[in-house]
Image 1 (cartoon, rainbow, N blue to C red):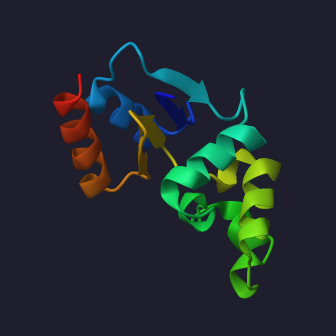
Image 2: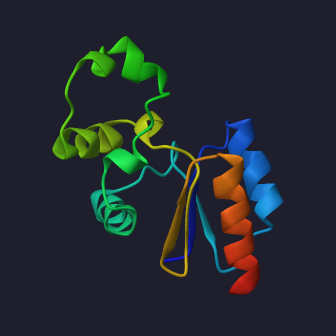
Length: 119
């Protein structure tokens, strides 16, 4: 699965997608209009090692629902990501069975280098 999960209203996601210059084999999945499903999330978890790695603790709902004060389990992280798109850390790129999560410059540079090597 060569796919990027992103939010079209997120300027950072748009900038990163443009910066990565993704090959045509990469499917763009806008997570608000086409939410991530359980099978996709399980695949991402198998690549990332945990649901927590895919969970955004910067989401407004994380704070407004008081989740920062709770001990969340892996099952909780999974359930919240499936419940609302905002809980998925963005963007998430899967390319040739490698996963790149989030928008840090280190992650973006690693994704760029990997794509360039494997085009």
